[in-house]
Image 1: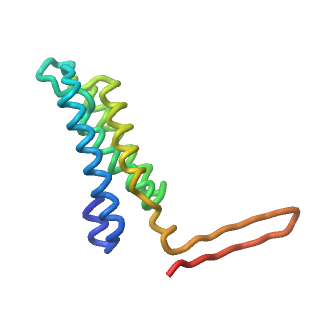
Image 2 (image 1 turned 90 degrees about the vertical axis):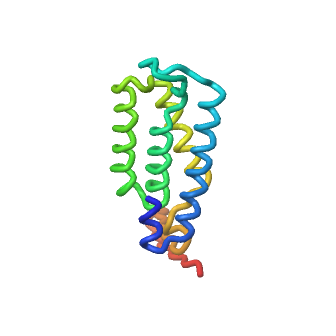
Length: 139
């Protein structure tokens, strides 16, 4: 997602993604240091929240909110797969994964704005057979 924003020249998107990712990682790492929950496989005390899940859901939420559901659905599908794989590998339980997803989505939604809304806005109203089509372009 970050590389794509750079390739297409979406500088605002690059900055929005970076802020969301920084917040996601700060909250995730901070909670891991404070909570110290043991992993289901008992390998260490870094279970809560799932860092893999928070990062992938932050990315999926950025893609969906910035570029739309057309790209967001595959991104959320992949993020969900990551969450399920973390449970299946016994690195996390459902609560760790859900917390990671909430952190990731929430962090991304705080900073991400829709790409087209910055430039173009289309509207349509229909009242009692009257139709109104609006177009707004912001310079």
